[in-house]
Image 1 (spheres, rainbow, N blue to C red):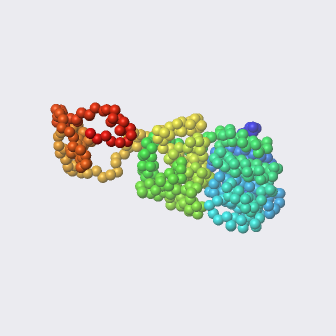
Image 2: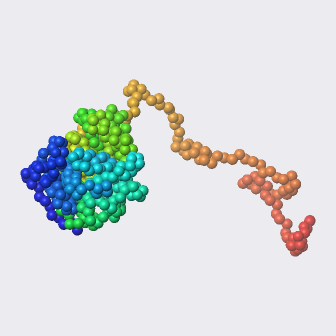
Length: 479
């Protein structure tokens, strides 16, 4: 079990100059317009510079990436250059990999360190060529990294620092087996850093299996959303969620909205429906190629798209400055994911709004989210979209003066209906005379049967012993 030393948040925001960073890094930070460190940066950077393992939790959008990128660059530079890979940063998505790589290049522009991104959805050959030239830092997704390991184009035996960014997602949502395999390929003596917005207890227990006496930094209570994010839920029937979303975007003149759905197919359908409603929208998810995802994300950041529909995995790590609105079209089944979702807005001191569309089946999910956050989400009903109020049919109605022609049906008595149904079910067969073979003997005259009017059969002659003897011998005794 991991120890729980929690570094308390300092009420005074420190300057980057007081954290022990070198002049080259301070210059790069100043060029980005930053002078004061965020709480997570102020507490994490000294721990990483000291060489300790670190388990750091902070709200999304509070600067965790710079919290490990800046000290990592300084530690590697102080230890000298090498052609081997010395730092491995694992992330769950391609977009987050590109974001982290951009931070590495931005803050390390005055350090002679080489870095590369390794993720799927693109041609692997350019990555192989860059690896052959030699790199110090690799930012990778687990699947493509293991592809390189299998092809023996990457060597992890000299890694000195391992970083798991968005660690709860990495270990909790399908990456656990890949992570364990990758850790088994690394040298035992290394520094381990885990950064994330949430740390459930089971994730802490798992982290204890490969981290060595880590320091724990939490700048806020776990699983709490940013205070600058206003939260509201709109009750609505499931079938009317799409119409309500289009109404909110149009009536409020929203210009930049990130919408979350559960499935990739649902994201595509919602984007298409919004387009038909006159809203500029597109979807981003794992089934799209990397060039497609990059192009859609650029359009959204450039305000060419009003709505970007995404799944949890695809939206993980999206860094969009001053994103004003996040909409939960489908509520997540894991309450912690709600915190990640709404953390896309209200970043870096900006305010934002998180809207959830809640149908009857979503109520238990919202209750679990409120219990996790220990707060109620304001409920606000939109006029015209009240639950149980069905929309008018989309088909055109006939004018009022139009009357559908009525066809007069013949009236039948009940017993006539029953008689006709019985006749249709068992129609009477035509009477047929029995056909007798021409050689058959004519029946002997006899008494007539009164009920049927048919001749009665003649009485059989009495059988004698001679008749029985002849029949047994196969003969025929004629009269």
